[in-house]
Image 1: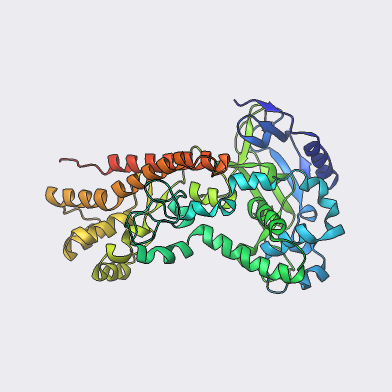
Image 2: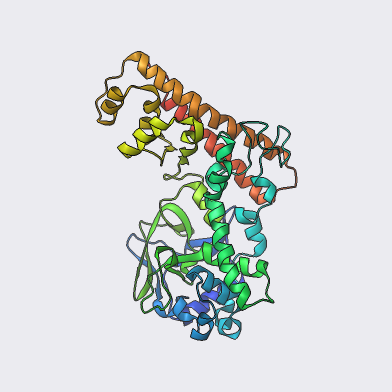
Length: 425
C-alpha cells in the first residue's frame, strides 16, 4: 500500500466548508498518496455498501447557480463555456467557492498533464532526427510524438488524408470547443485573457460530472449536462470503483467493496481508453480493462479499394475498427478478409461459418501483420526513440506519460501479434 500523508491546511479548510454546506462525509478523507498525488482514502475499515459521501443538489455548482444577468451576456455559449466564464470572471458571486478553488490543480499542473497545452511541435511530423516541421510528401511513414488516438497523427496513413484525420481527432475537437466558447466570452469580457479562461475551462473539463439540471433555460444536450460537485471531485478514476448515483436530490458515493484503513478509494468516470483519459483528464491508468487502439486509418485512402469500401458499408462493417488485449476486433477481421477473400467466402465468415483453408488463413494473417500490426509497432518504436531525443523541449510530466503510453501501445500490438500468429492446424 502507498504511503499517505495529510493533504494540507487548504484541503482541511475546504472539507470543513463542504460539511457546513450540507455535504455528508463518512469514513473517508483527502490525502497525499506517495507517487500518485491527491486522492481519497479510507479513514477506518469500510464495508461494502456503506454511504461514503452525500452531496445535496443545493451545493452543486450548476448553470442554475449562475446569476441570470451573467447568463444573458453569454448567448450561444455551451454550458461548459458558461461555467468556466463564471468561475473565471464571475466576481463577488464566486467568492463563496474560494476555499474550494484552493484545492484545484494549478495551471502548471495542467501544463504537465494536458495535451491541449503541450508544445505545438509535438503534433508535427518528425524526420529521422526528431526535428519537427518535416516536409509533408517526402516520406509516406512519418513519425509523431502524440499517440494517434489523441492527436489524429497517423504515421502510416496516406498524407492526402492527413489534414482530414487531424481535424476530427479528439485533441482538435477539444480545441475547437474551447475556441468557440472563448469567442463568446472574449466579446463579453474583452479585457480578459485567454490563458485565464483556459485554466477554468480545463477545471470544468476535468472535474465536472454528468447531471441533468431541471428548470434550466439554457438548452442542454448530453455534452452540456455538466455540474461541479464539491468533495466528490476528490475521488480519482479507476476502470472499476465505488458506485456514484445522482438524482434531483444530488450525488451519492457508495462503497463497492471492503476497504482497509489508508487504502485509496476510486470511482469510475466510465469505460474509457487511456488515450481518451489522457486527452480529457490528463492521466493514464497502469492497468485499464477498457484500453484499446483505433485502427480506422489503416482502411482509409488508397489502403482500401472502392469496391471493398462499398461492400463493407453495405454490410455495416465500415469503420470503428479497434485493437485491445484480445487482439483486433471482429469488425477488423471482417475488413481484412474483404481484402483477402472472394465475396462468397467473405460472407461465410461474417455469418460465422469458418470455411477457410490453411492457405487462406496464412494469407489473412499475413495481411493483418503487414498492413496493421507491424507498421503500428514501428510507429511505437519511432515515437519512443524521438521522445528520448527531445531533451527539455517537452514538460517532464508530459514526457514521462507519453513514454509510458507508447510502451503500453507497443505491448498491446505485440500481444496482438501473438494472438494472431501463424498457427498450423
